[in-house]
Image (cartoon, rainbow, N blue to C red; front, top):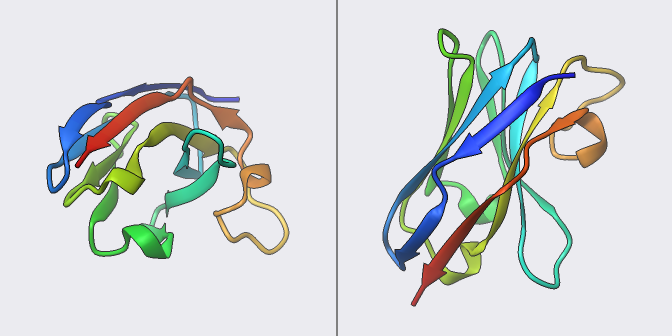
Length: 124
């Protein structure tokens, strides 16, 4: 498994920006971000697969969020712009050390390592 440490959460007004970081110790082939709002199930946000790299997003964040990877630092970032109150959630980083079957990169079951989560709060 891979150890993951997230940082960068916080509070911001609607329209603002935040950047989340997820530092990984160990080798992963895909890393992603999920979020869970109060009273709701955890949902996929974005993922990046290398070496291409290929990126994947859920529709509500397309055009606003950007996932990227710094291979030298073994860190994945989630740049979040034009934040909305509905983006409020605990954001968790996830990593997969292998890929199997027909991956979508959006299912929790495709990841075998998880970070502790970081709170993002967007006020209107």
